Length: 111
Image (cartoon, rainbow, N blue to C red):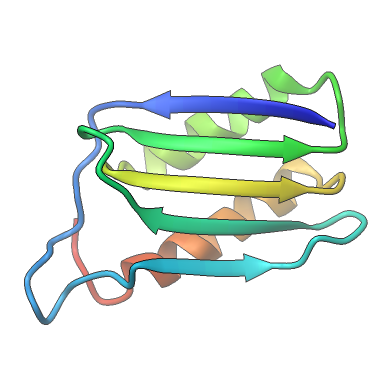
């Protein structure tokens, strides 16, 4: 197992008005071969978006960085913690699962 952590600045918090508040957390996916589980939580991180990854695929840090850079470019959020448990998902599956989780987390809220 390998643990990777990425942090991003410059994102926007989701609107926290009563009608548009995101849920406290969202969990999508499953921990299984070729798949991953993604937990997205609001967290007081001083404006950071922190992504913590536990992966069975050791040695792919540069690939993970590229996928996370792409995801943050599409979903520039602040004060959000994303936890990923991966069992060998491909980069395409990782991106799709993160889009699913972040769309569910945003709900009807607008960044």
